[in-house]
Length: 505
Image (tube, rainbow, N blue to C red):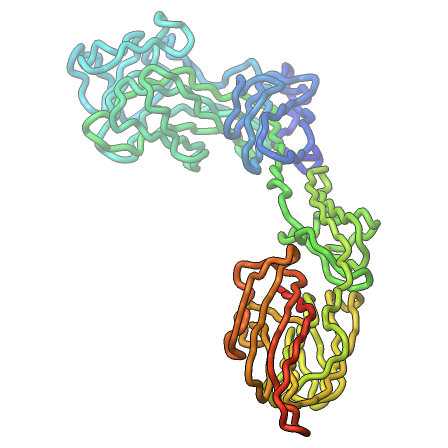
């Protein structure tokens, strides 16, 4: 955060000593990281007497000018610096003079083993009043100095310590006190006031016996010339509520607070369209499957900077989405060309439609097929031709990948045998078997040969047709021996047909 917009709590105090010095400092600017990481935070300045950092996951001493912290989500860290005057306005704040220079509603009782609730004793030992109390040392003298020791009262809002001091108008002061539980049970909840006005929230020390915790607040005197400082215990529990207090301080202070915001950008993970094939010239839209806010920029390797683009050429398309901090992600789309379809429609043909009940027309594989027949137009793959005429077909693999073909169907029926030149044994009900078709015949023998000349199918009936099972797609030779009546003479004569048939799968 820029220093000018930080919370300024420092007013230079016009008294001799360090309180007149400048306590301003500079912090690391707000920063952004692309994923959870350890970051370094720092302050710099000429008078960094008491630096204190506040925030989650600080893994170094939080009173150093430079610290490290693990940041796994966007976090604001606060840092303070204070330069306090050497003069403590509180008399006997460390209690080394004993039980004097303060007032309160608690009463003094130093009876070993039986301190009553609502009483206190100024002493250097804490474990002599009740057997369950811990032996805590005072805050500064490591066991030899005095401290205020009390068994909290069950009466609310009783003053446990008060003192009035003179202050200068429009001056900042720091109020500080150190508290520790001496029995971790229903710990004290202390409210500090100055001139009957609350200073800070209710303070409760960490629930660790003999570990000293500091209460600290800044107070500005405004137009006041005196400050009545009081401490009350808001906890009225009769069981526990036992603590020690030491080193109460009230000094002129220069104080500064600032903050550093560390923003964690979520991983820029996204996908654009899957690799695909198109007909060159056919257009489609390419875009990311995840939407990012307006802070992010979109950059394509085609130099476009929109969130989506229209693609109509083959090639590689790369999208990079980037945050102003530099956090980014990218994905690639490969577009390849589709081949033009191939027509398998075949040559013009003549059939006996009355015998065949229609001729299946199979044009080949394509994404979609458009037919223009003698009586209709339709979009379908295969059709059954039931009338004579021209059948036009267009096979599409894309708007710009297509092929057109046509076939003429003629009708002719006689007592002669009719044999198709191909069949498709795919069980679709159309042209699934091969054999002769005729209005009439007297004898009939069909042989099918493979490329090695071996007979792979035999039939003596028109109705017994070759279904192609167990054979591969290809061209096969057939021979048919049959007898047929000459319509003109009525004489029965032998005939033979030899040819090829194409098996299509």
